[in-house]
Structures are given as structure tokens and as C-alpha cells.
Length: 134
Image (cartoon, rainbow, N blue to C red; front, side, top):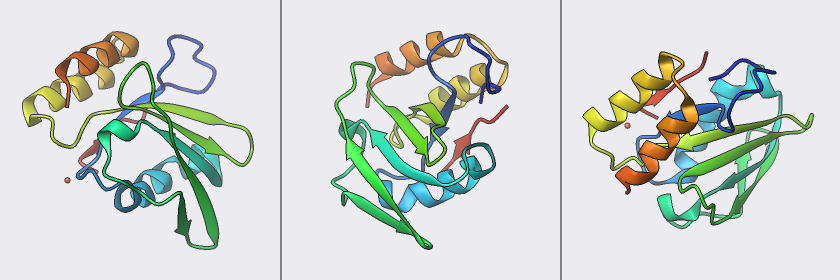
């Protein structure tokens, strides 16, 4: 994931979930993001990459709002904190071939232009396996 205040590009990181079940995948992601974001109150996601989901997720004592939104750049996710911090993720669909997903994660890990990587993922189409955090 890009350092805070990096200022380059639009996407902060790449996430490759194990399944298409958003409610099952989010607890792990939110745990990883908690040191950077603090408490999460909302997740805005592209519904094309996920099976139908409830509009809220109970995570411990917190109720997190889940809002589907059809993004122009498919498989985009916004994770919003209660402190006003937003992390933008490019989600690699869980059905993506492992070699393709690994290449995207490696490119991001090498701090390649993540917007270029995001565009590549969008063209590739339709286990959390990996999450890149810098």
C-alpha cells in the first residue's frame, strides 16, 4: 500500500480476497487496515465482483455500512474510517488465475505505477490470499 500522503495515483493498494463473499472477507481486511485507518464505518464496493451481501456488517461492537456502487474502474473498493481517512483498493477478483494475480501483486509490491496495474487488472476481467501494504 502506498504511504499516506504519497500523492501519486488514485489507488492506495491491491487486495486479493479468497472468495466472492464480502462479509466473510472484510473482517481480515479491516484488521490489516485498522492501524492505518482506525475504526472503519463504511465500505463502498463494486458489486460486480461479489455475491449478494447484506447492507451492514457487525464486526465486534462496530456496525459497518456496506454500500454497493458501480465504479467505472471495475473492482474498486473504498474503505472509510470514522476519522475521515479513506483507503482506495483495487480488488483482484477471487476467480483470477493465480499467476495473473501474483504478477499484479508483485508489480504493486515493487511500487510500480499502481494505476497502470489497476488498468491491467480491469482488462483481465472477472483464499484473503494477499494484501499489499507498503
